[in-house]
Length: 161
Image (cartoon, rainbow, N blue to C red; front, side):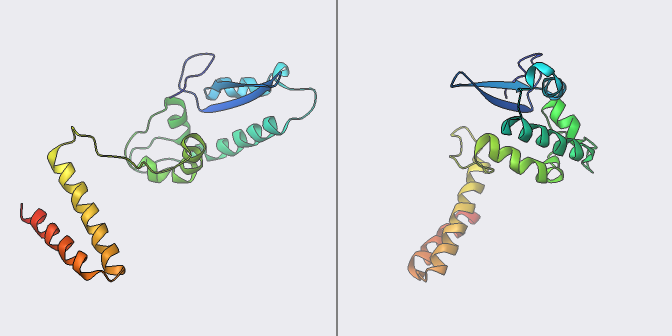
């Protein structure tokens, strides 16, 4: 996670400015972002689309600061300040605000990758069962019943093991 350029807290705002034709990234925590946006030195002589968008985004986020997880009670503002969730249900409670944030930062909202080799055996078994069931559904949808029968047998072997 990126840190605020001013105080080293987790950054919740990331700005890219163009100076002399080269991009410069600036990262801010909640407090320093608002200071930066309100400082006269940061304001160009005219209005820039990037500044306007960030200011608008800041206002939009402020409106959602009241969001609270019903399970642990953490607010969206506390999440942004701490950089951590209070419980697994926060993903659902803050989904409307997180999806655009994750898409902006990572380009995707879902991890796709391999299972680590050091993962517990039961986790690998569960992952393999999920994969087999997905393959079975694809084979049945494609009317490839021979392959579906083989996959069904593999699933039964896994369930019996």
